Image (cartoon, rainbow, N blue to C red):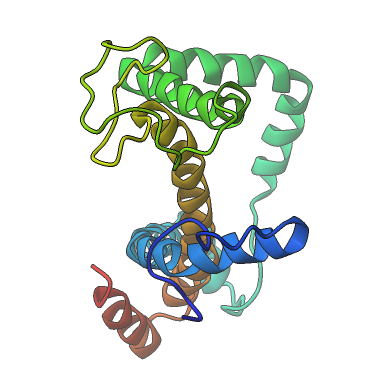
Length: 212
């Protein structure tokens, strides 16, 4: 079909170059969009909440009380001075942020897992040069029974470890594309809902609820 709902690429097609890229992209559209629409609702609500919170700040209320129209951009002067004072210490701020991030055990473990997946996806094809679809042994071979097959084989005699290594690339691609879809759709909708409010906000919120 035009938009396959499964698979990473067309089996047996042997595309190369741009044709292979387009073939992989065609297979990613449906799964990535399905995941992205769910997270789109999350990003939309977060952006809307940020817009509403900003509109309730004291300097915004003061500017509107003095006659500033709603569509104008407002920024207090003290923010500029604070940012200018900190610009010389950006490296220190980044280091402090990294220390706080690594101090969180959950965040640190998540970062390690993500790095392992990325390294597996990048270096895996260099270790497993043959196709992961190739039958290498008898089916249902238990793990650690044959050298070179640490996780054994599946129902068709294919190397399970090779399948996991090549599958990491698919997982990263789907995650990346779905996140981009969620951000591109969710952030503008959330910003519009928080900015205009009223009927526009209600209509966009009802639309978002379809995906949650």
